[in-house]
Image (cartoon, rainbow, N blue to C red; front, top):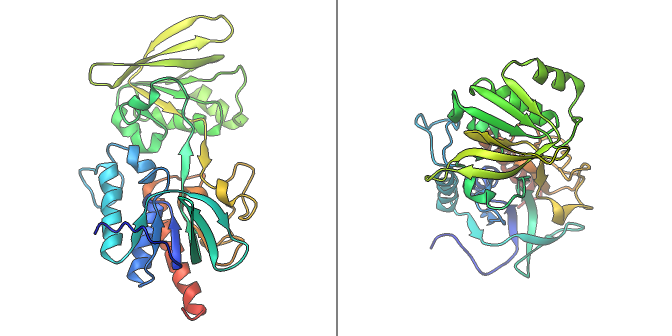
Length: 316
């Protein structure tokens, strides 16, 4: 048995998502003998499933393969009694308890729920970009900047996160080119001024990445930019391409029930709680700042402990 179930019944806790937050929550909940059910989600393993090497997760001095890390977390959770099912939550009824979640056309009942479904990076949406992810194409400067020491780096975006990532990446890169599709940035003035004052940062405005060029090994070696004003196509040599155009929190089934902000991120109520008693959050569905594997795992730990205390108070 690999921990995958097909029979759906009422559970003490259903954990939605199988990234670092969901898997850590599953480990803690399983060790508390809550027999958690984990809904794997549309992106099994979360953001780490597309990360080739993780060098900043404690305990791995040589780094660890991203998919291997989350798979080992899953195995650890299963070892303690967690169960996993394939599929995503299509609908949710959180209006009363037990809560109801629809997965693959069937309803699951749960006394408590941990929403750990993560946030998906916004990519450029250009043909063929998928093959370059983790091959020099990334949405996380903190995760992957180290791999581009003394390399040519490009950042795409016009908000505060793009400015922050561009500045951060100058610690590693030989140069950083910031590309924005408009004349004006959305970022705050202080962030724009900071980026413009950095001698390593060059800015290209009114332009967008039209295509990515790779070598025989499939690694990024350049891009073609389209200038919207002149119509000119410009080939630029780059070793790393970072996208900083935002994330999409995977909270669609819960909007209108769980309190969220204008972008869909869960608004926490302290600890790991939401506005609905018995429903908790963990990881990038609420965290728009750090987005790290270790912070997601910490959030999963907190959510599971809060679930355990919540159920214990009810006599379960």
